[in-house]
Length: 102
Ligand SMILES: [Zn+2]
Image (cartoon, rainbow, N blue to C red; front, side):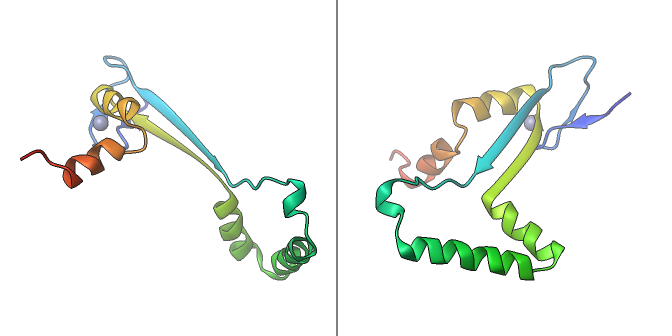
């Protein structure tokens, strides 16, 4: 039997008895390539970046690519899923601390 645990609260999830929620997060750095950005400086910068990437060894270049693209997968228990889907960016929790009603 495969054992799962919630990535948020750490509770173990019995896959046979309760629902497990799989959250897939994909983060990709993007930059709008409109005419305004097609300047000489940008092209130079791109060439520079390529040269840097070529010089780096595999370990370091993989760190850089993590800045540009990341894919994560989380298992959530039922109650953590409900909290997550209501407030995926965690903004609710933060504002509760900042603006607690008195
Ligand atoms: Zn949980």
